[in-house]
Amino acid sequence: MKTIYLNNAATAWPRAPGVIEAVSDTLATPPSHPGRSVSAGTDVVRECRERLAGLLGGVPPSRIVLSTNATGALNLALLGIDLEQEASVVITVTEHNSVLRPLHHLAKKKGIRIITVGLDDTGALDEEAFEAAMASRPALVVMNHASNVTGRVNRVERFLQRAKAIGATTLLDASQTLGHRPVDAEALSADLVAFTGHKGLRGPAGTGGLYVNPALELEQVIVGGTGVRSDLMLHPPDMPMRLEAGTPNVPALAGLAAALRWLAQDGDAFCARERETARSLREGLKHIDGVRVADAASDPERVGIVSFQLRGWDVEEVGFVLSESFGVVCRTGLHCAPLIHKALGTVPAGTIRLSVSGFTTDEDIAVALDAVSSLAQ
Amino acid sequence: MKIIGADKLEDCFDGSVVFGYRFDEAWERETIMRLKSLGEVDYFPDFPRPFFRLRSKSGLQVKGVEGESTCRVIYSNEGKEVEKQSFEGLFVSG
Image (tube, rainbow over all chains, first blue to last red; front, side, top):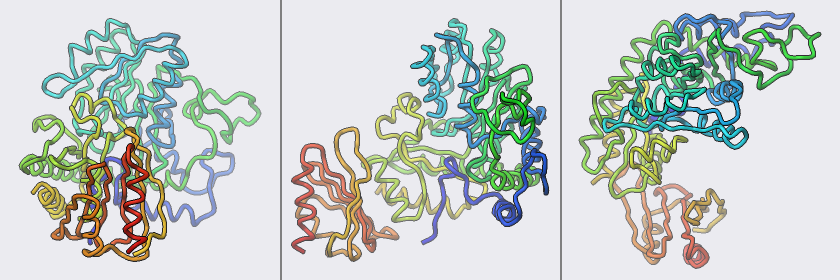
Protein backbone atom coordinates (compact mmCIF):
# COMPACT_ATOMS: atom_id res chain seq x y z
CA MET A 1 0.00 0.00 0.00
CA LYS A 2 1.35 3.38 -1.01
CA THR A 3 1.89 5.92 1.75
CA ILE A 4 0.16 9.22 1.08
CA TYR A 5 1.79 11.82 3.27
CA LEU A 6 -0.67 14.54 4.25
CA ASN A 7 1.05 15.80 7.39
CA ASN A 8 3.16 18.53 5.85
CA ALA A 9 2.04 21.10 8.42
CA ALA A 10 3.91 19.08 11.04
CA THR A 11 7.00 18.30 8.99
CA ALA A 12 7.26 18.63 5.23
CA TRP A 13 8.02 15.45 3.29
CA PRO A 14 9.59 14.75 0.92
CA ARG A 15 12.30 17.30 1.58
CA ALA A 16 13.29 19.77 -1.10
CA PRO A 17 15.48 18.27 -3.83
CA GLY A 18 19.13 18.42 -2.82
CA VAL A 19 18.57 18.40 0.95
CA ILE A 20 19.47 14.76 1.59
CA GLU A 21 22.64 15.02 -0.50
CA ALA A 22 23.70 18.25 1.21
CA VAL A 23 23.25 16.78 4.70
CA SER A 24 24.97 13.55 3.71
CA ASP A 25 27.91 15.30 2.01
CA THR A 26 28.44 17.49 5.06
CA LEU A 27 28.47 14.50 7.38
CA ALA A 28 30.86 12.65 5.08
CA THR A 29 33.49 15.39 4.93
CA PRO A 30 35.75 16.74 7.68
CA PRO A 31 33.70 19.17 9.78
CA SER A 32 34.04 22.89 9.15
CA HIS A 33 33.13 25.33 11.86
CA PRO A 34 31.64 28.39 10.23
CA GLY A 35 32.57 31.60 11.98
CA ARG A 36 35.32 29.93 13.96
CA SER A 37 38.96 30.92 13.61
CA VAL A 38 39.79 27.98 11.36
CA SER A 39 37.05 27.27 8.84
CA ALA A 40 37.11 25.25 5.65
CA GLY A 41 34.47 24.62 3.06
CA THR A 42 31.39 26.56 2.19
CA ASP A 43 29.98 28.70 4.92
CA VAL A 44 26.46 27.32 4.85
CA VAL A 45 25.60 29.25 7.99
CA ARG A 46 26.25 32.52 6.21
CA GLU A 47 24.37 31.32 3.13
CA CYS A 48 21.32 30.40 5.24
CA ARG A 49 21.36 33.79 6.92
CA GLU A 50 21.60 35.61 3.60
CA ARG A 51 18.88 33.61 1.89
CA LEU A 52 16.53 33.83 4.88
CA ALA A 53 17.10 37.58 5.06
CA GLY A 54 16.07 37.77 1.41
CA LEU A 55 12.93 35.72 2.04
CA LEU A 56 11.94 38.06 4.85
CA GLY A 57 11.92 41.06 2.54
CA GLY A 58 15.59 41.92 2.29
CA VAL A 59 16.34 42.49 5.97
CA PRO A 60 20.00 42.65 7.11
CA PRO A 61 21.43 39.09 7.32
CA SER A 62 23.10 39.97 10.63
CA ARG A 63 19.62 40.26 12.16
CA ILE A 64 18.78 36.62 11.37
CA VAL A 65 19.40 34.48 14.45
CA LEU A 66 19.59 30.76 13.71
CA SER A 67 17.90 28.44 16.19
CA THR A 68 16.77 24.86 16.50
CA ASN A 69 13.17 25.42 15.35
CA ALA A 70 10.32 27.92 15.69
CA THR A 71 9.83 27.02 19.34
CA GLY A 72 13.47 27.86 20.04
CA ALA A 73 13.11 31.13 18.13
CA LEU A 74 9.90 32.06 19.95
CA ASN A 75 11.53 31.36 23.31
CA LEU A 76 14.48 33.57 22.34
CA ALA A 77 12.00 36.33 21.52
CA LEU A 78 9.52 35.97 24.37
CA LEU A 79 12.11 35.45 27.08
CA GLY A 80 14.49 38.00 25.54
CA ILE A 81 12.08 40.92 25.35
CA ASP A 82 12.43 41.36 29.11
CA LEU A 83 8.81 42.23 29.81
CA GLU A 84 8.21 44.22 32.97
CA GLN A 85 6.24 42.82 35.90
CA GLU A 86 2.52 42.77 35.06
CA ALA A 87 3.11 43.92 31.47
CA SER A 88 0.23 43.36 29.10
CA VAL A 89 0.66 41.02 26.12
CA VAL A 90 -1.94 40.63 23.37
CA ILE A 91 -2.22 37.36 21.45
CA THR A 92 -4.84 35.61 19.31
CA VAL A 93 -6.78 32.38 19.69
CA THR A 94 -4.83 30.97 16.75
CA GLU A 95 -1.54 30.76 18.68
CA HIS A 96 0.38 27.53 19.05
CA ASN A 97 1.62 26.20 22.39
CA SER A 98 5.09 27.37 21.39
CA VAL A 99 3.74 30.89 22.07
CA LEU A 100 1.18 30.08 24.76
CA ARG A 101 3.46 28.10 27.05
CA PRO A 102 6.37 30.58 27.19
CA LEU A 103 3.84 33.34 27.86
CA HIS A 104 2.10 31.40 30.60
CA HIS A 105 5.54 30.65 32.03
CA LEU A 106 6.08 34.43 32.15
CA ALA A 107 2.63 34.96 33.61
CA LYS A 108 3.54 32.65 36.46
CA LYS A 109 7.02 34.08 36.89
CA LYS A 110 6.43 37.79 36.32
CA GLY A 111 2.71 38.23 36.49
CA ILE A 112 2.32 39.39 32.89
CA ARG A 113 -1.28 39.75 31.69
CA ILE A 114 -2.26 37.84 28.57
CA ILE A 115 -5.17 39.25 26.56
CA THR A 116 -6.51 36.95 23.86
CA VAL A 117 -8.25 38.20 20.72
CA GLY A 118 -10.85 35.84 19.31
CA LEU A 119 -12.49 35.37 15.94
CA ASP A 120 -15.44 37.28 14.47
CA ASP A 121 -18.50 35.74 12.80
CA THR A 122 -16.59 35.23 9.56
CA GLY A 123 -13.76 33.32 11.23
CA ALA A 124 -11.30 36.20 10.84
CA LEU A 125 -9.49 37.83 13.77
CA ASP A 126 -11.93 40.07 15.63
CA GLU A 127 -10.95 43.67 14.88
CA GLU A 128 -13.17 45.15 17.57
CA ALA A 129 -11.75 42.85 20.21
CA PHE A 130 -8.25 43.72 19.07
CA GLU A 131 -8.97 47.42 19.29
CA ALA A 132 -10.37 46.93 22.79
CA ALA A 133 -7.21 45.05 23.73
CA MET A 134 -5.07 47.99 22.62
CA ALA A 135 -6.55 49.97 25.51
CA SER A 136 -4.39 47.86 27.84
CA ARG A 137 -1.34 49.52 26.24
CA PRO A 138 0.36 46.17 25.54
CA ALA A 139 4.13 45.93 25.65
CA LEU A 140 3.98 43.10 23.14
CA VAL A 141 1.58 41.87 20.47
CA VAL A 142 2.08 38.31 19.18
CA MET A 143 0.31 37.13 16.06
CA ASN A 144 0.21 33.82 14.28
CA HIS A 145 0.56 34.41 10.54
CA ALA A 146 -1.48 31.31 9.65
CA SER A 147 -3.40 28.87 11.80
CA ASN A 148 -1.92 25.39 11.93
CA VAL A 149 -5.48 24.09 12.42
CA THR A 150 -7.49 25.82 9.69
CA GLY A 151 -4.73 27.06 7.39
CA ARG A 152 -6.31 30.52 7.31
CA VAL A 153 -3.76 33.29 6.79
CA ASN A 154 -4.39 36.04 9.32
CA ARG A 155 -4.42 39.55 7.82
CA VAL A 156 -1.85 40.68 10.33
CA GLU A 157 -0.65 43.87 8.62
CA ARG A 158 -3.20 46.29 10.02
CA PHE A 159 -3.15 44.71 13.46
CA LEU A 160 0.63 44.87 13.78
CA GLN A 161 0.72 48.37 12.30
CA ARG A 162 -1.79 49.50 14.91
CA ALA A 163 0.18 47.79 17.68
CA LYS A 164 3.37 49.54 16.65
CA ALA A 165 1.55 52.86 16.52
CA ILE A 166 0.90 52.62 20.24
CA GLY A 167 4.48 51.58 21.00
CA ALA A 168 4.12 47.81 21.31
CA THR A 169 6.78 45.41 20.11
CA THR A 170 5.37 43.05 17.48
CA LEU A 171 6.17 39.36 17.07
CA LEU A 172 4.97 37.32 14.08
CA ASP A 173 4.89 33.53 14.24
CA ALA A 174 5.55 32.55 10.61
CA SER A 175 5.87 28.81 11.31
CA GLN A 176 3.14 27.95 8.80
CA THR A 177 3.82 30.65 6.22
CA LEU A 178 7.52 31.12 5.48
CA GLY A 179 8.19 29.25 2.27
CA HIS A 180 4.47 29.06 1.45
CA ARG A 181 3.84 32.76 0.80
CA PRO A 182 5.68 36.09 1.05
CA VAL A 183 6.63 37.17 4.56
CA ASP A 184 8.02 40.70 4.36
CA ALA A 185 8.87 41.68 7.93
CA GLU A 186 8.85 45.42 7.32
CA ALA A 187 5.69 45.47 5.20
CA LEU A 188 3.91 43.42 7.85
CA SER A 189 5.16 45.72 10.65
CA ALA A 190 6.77 42.78 12.43
CA ASP A 191 9.68 43.62 14.74
CA LEU A 192 10.35 39.94 15.27
CA VAL A 193 9.59 37.01 12.99
CA ALA A 194 9.97 33.41 14.20
CA PHE A 195 10.13 30.58 11.69
CA THR A 196 11.15 26.95 11.26
CA GLY A 197 13.17 25.18 8.59
CA HIS A 198 11.30 21.86 8.42
CA LYS A 199 7.87 22.97 7.24
CA GLY A 200 7.40 25.42 4.33
CA LEU A 201 11.11 25.71 3.70
CA ARG A 202 11.29 21.90 3.35
CA GLY A 203 14.66 21.62 5.08
CA PRO A 204 15.73 19.32 7.90
CA ALA A 205 14.22 19.37 11.39
CA GLY A 206 16.44 21.09 13.93
CA THR A 207 16.63 24.31 11.93
CA GLY A 208 14.79 27.58 12.29
CA GLY A 209 15.35 31.15 13.25
CA LEU A 210 14.30 34.55 14.41
CA TYR A 211 14.47 37.90 12.65
CA VAL A 212 15.17 40.78 15.01
CA ASN A 213 14.53 44.36 13.89
CA PRO A 214 17.73 46.45 14.03
CA ALA A 215 16.00 48.90 16.39
CA LEU A 216 15.41 46.13 18.91
CA GLU A 217 17.89 44.55 21.30
CA LEU A 218 16.86 41.31 22.98
CA GLU A 219 18.23 40.08 26.29
CA GLN A 220 20.49 37.06 25.94
CA VAL A 221 18.79 33.81 26.88
CA ILE A 222 21.48 31.32 25.83
CA VAL A 223 25.15 32.20 26.35
CA GLY A 224 28.40 30.28 25.95
CA GLY A 225 30.97 29.49 23.27
CA THR A 226 30.99 31.45 20.03
CA GLY A 227 34.38 30.53 18.57
CA VAL A 228 35.45 34.17 18.45
CA ARG A 229 36.34 36.78 21.09
CA SER A 230 37.24 33.97 23.48
CA ASP A 231 38.93 36.41 25.85
CA LEU A 232 35.55 37.86 26.92
CA MET A 233 33.97 36.47 30.08
CA LEU A 234 30.58 37.73 28.99
CA HIS A 235 28.87 36.58 25.79
CA PRO A 236 29.61 38.95 22.87
CA PRO A 237 26.94 41.61 22.35
CA ASP A 238 27.12 41.72 18.53
CA MET A 239 24.35 40.33 16.38
CA PRO A 240 23.70 37.64 15.40
CA MET A 241 26.07 35.86 17.80
CA ARG A 242 24.52 37.86 20.65
CA LEU A 243 21.65 35.38 20.54
CA GLU A 244 23.52 32.27 19.37
CA ALA A 245 25.87 30.03 21.33
CA GLY A 246 27.54 26.67 20.80
CA THR A 247 28.44 24.74 17.67
CA PRO A 248 25.73 25.18 15.02
CA ASN A 249 24.00 22.19 13.45
CA VAL A 250 26.05 22.49 10.26
CA PRO A 251 24.77 19.33 8.50
CA ALA A 252 21.16 20.42 8.97
CA LEU A 253 21.97 23.98 7.94
CA ALA A 254 23.65 22.61 4.79
CA GLY A 255 20.35 20.89 4.08
CA LEU A 256 18.44 24.06 4.77
CA ALA A 257 20.71 26.02 2.44
CA ALA A 258 20.01 23.48 -0.30
CA ALA A 259 16.27 23.78 0.37
CA LEU A 260 16.48 27.58 0.18
CA ARG A 261 18.33 27.37 -3.14
CA TRP A 262 15.61 25.09 -4.53
CA LEU A 263 12.86 27.33 -3.16
CA ALA A 264 14.39 30.40 -4.83
CA GLN A 265 14.25 28.61 -8.15
CA ASP A 266 11.06 26.53 -8.02
CA GLY A 267 9.15 27.89 -5.05
CA ASP A 268 6.54 29.98 -6.88
CA ALA A 269 5.29 27.14 -9.06
CA PHE A 270 5.46 24.71 -6.15
CA CYS A 271 3.38 26.95 -3.89
CA ALA A 272 0.81 27.62 -6.62
CA ARG A 273 0.42 23.88 -7.03
CA GLU A 274 0.09 23.49 -3.24
CA ARG A 275 -2.69 26.08 -3.03
CA GLU A 276 -4.62 24.44 -5.86
CA THR A 277 -4.26 20.99 -4.29
CA ALA A 278 -5.43 22.27 -0.91
CA ARG A 279 -8.44 23.93 -2.53
CA SER A 280 -9.41 20.66 -4.26
CA LEU A 281 -9.10 18.78 -1.00
CA ARG A 282 -11.13 21.34 0.94
CA GLU A 283 -13.91 21.48 -1.63
CA GLY A 284 -13.93 17.70 -1.95
CA LEU A 285 -14.27 17.21 1.80
CA LYS A 286 -17.09 19.74 1.98
CA HIS A 287 -19.10 17.59 -0.43
CA ILE A 288 -18.86 14.41 1.65
CA ASP A 289 -21.97 13.84 3.74
CA GLY A 290 -21.09 13.88 7.44
CA VAL A 291 -17.91 15.91 7.08
CA ARG A 292 -17.73 19.17 8.95
CA VAL A 293 -14.79 21.26 7.74
CA ALA A 294 -13.49 23.55 10.47
CA ASP A 295 -13.63 27.17 9.26
CA ALA A 296 -15.23 26.17 5.97
CA ALA A 297 -15.30 29.57 4.24
CA SER A 298 -13.86 29.35 0.74
CA ASP A 299 -12.71 32.92 0.26
CA PRO A 300 -9.87 33.60 2.75
CA GLU A 301 -6.26 33.01 1.77
CA ARG A 302 -4.97 29.77 3.23
CA VAL A 303 -1.89 27.60 3.37
CA GLY A 304 -2.27 23.91 2.52
CA ILE A 305 -4.14 22.79 5.64
CA VAL A 306 -7.68 21.42 5.99
CA SER A 307 -9.20 20.30 9.30
CA PHE A 308 -12.46 18.44 9.74
CA GLN A 309 -14.59 16.18 11.88
CA LEU A 310 -16.61 13.21 10.65
CA ARG A 311 -20.04 12.40 12.01
CA GLY A 312 -20.21 9.07 13.85
CA TRP A 313 -16.46 8.70 14.20
CA ASP A 314 -14.00 9.68 16.90
CA VAL A 315 -11.34 12.02 15.59
CA GLU A 316 -8.53 9.77 16.80
CA GLU A 317 -10.19 6.75 15.21
CA VAL A 318 -10.42 8.44 11.82
CA GLY A 319 -6.70 9.18 11.99
CA PHE A 320 -6.00 5.55 12.85
CA VAL A 321 -8.12 4.21 9.99
CA LEU A 322 -6.82 6.67 7.41
CA SER A 323 -3.28 5.76 8.31
CA GLU A 324 -3.55 2.02 8.96
CA SER A 325 -6.23 1.02 6.46
CA PHE A 326 -5.66 3.50 3.65
CA GLY A 327 -2.05 4.63 4.07
CA VAL A 328 -3.06 8.28 4.42
CA VAL A 329 -0.81 9.90 7.00
CA CYS A 330 -2.56 12.72 8.86
CA ARG A 331 -2.70 14.22 12.33
CA THR A 332 -5.54 14.27 14.83
CA GLY A 333 -6.33 16.12 18.05
CA LEU A 334 -5.77 19.70 19.13
CA HIS A 335 -2.55 20.19 17.12
CA CYS A 336 -0.90 22.07 20.04
CA ALA A 337 -3.30 24.98 19.45
CA PRO A 338 -6.00 24.52 22.11
CA LEU A 339 -7.56 28.00 22.03
CA ILE A 340 -8.78 27.98 18.44
CA HIS A 341 -10.71 24.76 19.01
CA LYS A 342 -12.90 26.53 21.54
CA ALA A 343 -13.61 29.19 18.91
CA LEU A 344 -14.32 26.56 16.24
CA GLY A 345 -16.45 24.39 18.51
CA THR A 346 -14.13 21.41 18.04
CA VAL A 347 -13.28 20.76 21.70
CA PRO A 348 -12.44 18.42 23.34
CA ALA A 349 -11.49 15.98 20.57
CA GLY A 350 -10.08 18.48 18.08
CA THR A 351 -9.94 17.72 14.38
CA ILE A 352 -8.50 15.47 11.73
CA ARG A 353 -5.94 17.57 9.88
CA LEU A 354 -4.78 16.93 6.34
CA SER A 355 -1.95 19.12 5.07
CA VAL A 356 -0.71 18.99 1.49
CA SER A 357 2.34 20.23 -0.40
CA GLY A 358 3.23 20.97 -4.00
CA PHE A 359 4.38 17.35 -4.21
CA THR A 360 0.88 16.04 -3.39
CA THR A 361 -0.70 14.64 -6.55
CA ASP A 362 -4.30 14.67 -7.76
CA GLU A 363 -4.29 10.91 -7.25
CA ASP A 364 -3.23 11.36 -3.62
CA ILE A 365 -6.16 13.71 -3.06
CA ALA A 366 -8.54 11.28 -4.77
CA VAL A 367 -7.38 8.44 -2.50
CA ALA A 368 -7.76 10.60 0.61
CA LEU A 369 -11.25 11.73 -0.39
CA ASP A 370 -12.27 8.15 -1.24
CA ALA A 371 -10.98 7.03 2.15
CA VAL A 372 -13.00 9.66 4.02
CA SER A 373 -16.04 8.82 1.87
CA SER A 374 -15.67 5.14 2.76
CA LEU A 375 -15.77 6.01 6.45
CA ALA A 376 -18.69 8.36 5.98
CA GLN A 377 -20.93 5.65 4.47
CA MET B 1 -3.40 -16.46 19.12
CA LYS B 2 -1.43 -15.46 22.18
CA ILE B 3 -0.64 -12.10 23.70
CA ILE B 4 3.12 -11.57 23.64
CA GLY B 5 3.16 -8.03 25.03
CA ALA B 6 1.11 -5.04 26.14
CA ASP B 7 2.40 -1.49 26.43
CA LYS B 8 0.57 1.33 28.14
CA LEU B 9 0.38 4.12 25.55
CA GLU B 10 -1.66 6.84 27.19
CA ASP B 11 -3.59 7.97 30.27
CA CYS B 12 -6.64 9.92 29.15
CA PHE B 13 -8.27 12.88 30.90
CA ASP B 14 -11.41 10.88 31.64
CA GLY B 15 -9.44 8.21 33.48
CA SER B 16 -9.46 5.67 30.67
CA VAL B 17 -6.20 3.98 29.67
CA VAL B 18 -4.90 3.10 26.22
CA PHE B 19 -2.81 -0.05 25.68
CA GLY B 20 -1.05 -1.36 22.60
CA TYR B 21 -1.17 -5.18 22.41
CA ARG B 22 1.16 -7.43 20.45
CA PHE B 23 0.24 -10.99 19.43
CA ASP B 24 2.11 -13.99 18.11
CA GLU B 25 0.03 -14.01 14.94
CA ALA B 26 -2.03 -11.66 12.81
CA TRP B 27 -5.71 -10.81 13.32
CA GLU B 28 -7.94 -12.80 10.99
CA ARG B 29 -11.66 -12.51 10.37
CA GLU B 30 -12.32 -15.41 12.74
CA THR B 31 -10.44 -13.84 15.64
CA ILE B 32 -12.04 -10.48 14.97
CA MET B 33 -15.49 -12.02 15.19
CA ARG B 34 -14.58 -13.61 18.49
CA LEU B 35 -14.66 -10.07 19.95
CA LYS B 36 -18.44 -10.09 19.56
CA SER B 37 -18.68 -11.85 22.91
CA LEU B 38 -17.56 -8.57 24.50
CA GLY B 39 -19.74 -6.07 22.66
CA GLU B 40 -20.63 -4.60 19.29
CA VAL B 41 -18.10 -5.21 16.54
CA ASP B 42 -17.80 -3.07 13.40
CA TYR B 43 -15.81 -4.70 10.62
CA PHE B 44 -14.95 -2.98 7.36
CA PRO B 45 -13.75 -5.70 4.97
CA ASP B 46 -13.83 -3.40 1.93
CA PHE B 47 -11.11 -1.06 3.19
CA PRO B 48 -7.71 -1.65 1.52
CA ARG B 49 -6.59 -3.05 4.88
CA PRO B 50 -9.78 -4.09 6.73
CA PHE B 51 -10.41 -2.17 9.94
CA PHE B 52 -12.28 -3.51 12.96
CA ARG B 53 -13.43 -2.02 16.21
CA LEU B 54 -15.21 -3.28 19.28
CA ARG B 55 -17.27 -1.09 21.56
CA SER B 56 -18.72 -2.53 24.76
CA LYS B 57 -21.43 -1.02 26.95
CA SER B 58 -18.95 -0.55 29.79
CA GLY B 59 -16.63 1.52 27.59
CA LEU B 60 -14.08 -1.07 26.44
CA GLN B 61 -12.83 -0.34 22.92
CA VAL B 62 -10.60 -2.45 20.68
CA LYS B 63 -9.30 -1.17 17.33
CA GLY B 64 -7.13 -2.86 14.80
CA VAL B 65 -6.47 -3.90 11.24
CA GLU B 66 -6.89 -7.40 9.83
CA GLY B 67 -3.52 -8.84 8.90
CA GLU B 68 -1.68 -6.98 11.65
CA SER B 69 -0.46 -8.67 14.82
CA THR B 70 -1.22 -5.62 16.98
CA CYS B 71 -4.27 -3.76 18.23
CA ARG B 72 -5.14 -0.80 20.40
CA VAL B 73 -7.31 -1.29 23.47
CA ILE B 74 -8.98 1.40 25.55
CA TYR B 75 -10.10 0.42 29.04
CA SER B 76 -12.67 2.68 30.69
CA ASN B 77 -12.03 4.39 34.00
CA GLU B 78 -14.86 2.57 35.76
CA GLY B 79 -14.38 -0.95 34.50
CA LYS B 80 -10.77 -1.29 33.52
CA GLU B 81 -9.94 -4.33 35.66
CA VAL B 82 -12.96 -6.35 34.56
CA GLU B 83 -12.55 -5.26 30.92
CA LYS B 84 -8.88 -6.21 30.93
CA GLN B 85 -9.68 -9.63 32.31
CA SER B 86 -12.43 -10.19 29.70
CA PHE B 87 -10.31 -9.06 26.76
CA GLU B 88 -7.16 -10.95 27.71
CA GLY B 89 -9.31 -13.95 28.64
CA LEU B 90 -10.30 -14.35 25.01
CA PHE B 91 -6.77 -15.18 24.12
CA VAL B 92 -5.80 -17.18 27.16
CA SER B 93 -8.70 -19.51 26.52
CA GLY B 94 -8.31 -19.34 22.76
